[in-house]
View 1 (spheres, rainbow, N blue to C red):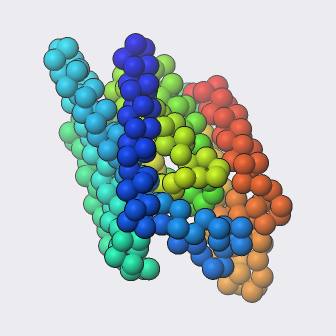
View 2: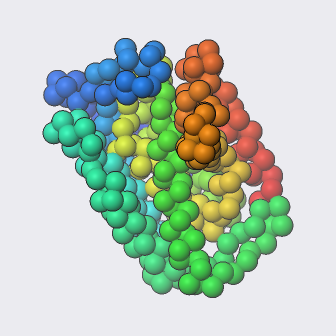
View 3: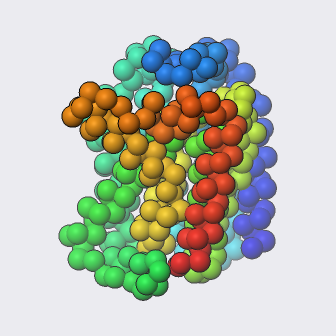
Length: 326
């Protein structure tokens, strides 16, 4: 636990320092938030707030995980160091796709950003590479842990690979949709990642506990600038990165099904959008005032801080339940 604690603290301070440096640069180059005209009116005052803050998390993770890799390598823990790389590469890859999207929107002033088809293709390629590496590179098998039953089910490889890819893409999209108000996605993700890190410790997967500790510190450092009123937003750079982290860790632990419990808040955010679209197409009416569902509560009179606190508490309770049923 000593190295995990050290990495968490180091990554926290590295991210805070990066925030102090990067946020004024984003502000100088006017890399500001563009609010939807059909969004909550209270968000219009956020127009121009520096975004693409996910860059802070990417740089911090690269620095700290690379430092951990070097330390573990010289400490005769080469296998552990080596196993950190595929998780890091998946998450950084997702973050870079989000960065390209943000860069086109905010710097090049292309309001459409990266074409959805190109974006999905990039995410798909990275997802396939990660899953194939897990199965054929690390040989972790295709076992999937069934919570409550507390046993593993071995899936045929031709079913497991598309299933695992779907988990990555769905999780990433869910976290992306959760990023809509100050501190929500970062708070919820920090709790989920902490839960997965604890599971890594309990099941003896030190690569997960080491990597998770780096990410927890990074997200907490980012939260120093992202809580309401936010001084910076993560953009797709950060939300895609965090979605990649959650899915990569869950698959490495062979517990993607557990995400239906511990990541229920992002799941509900996604379902609210699907329900709204389907119902509106069939009836011309809306189930929610606005989706994702955090905007529904916002338009119902809830303050942003209240939404973040309640959604985070719900996630915390769900993570405790998740730890109980594994």
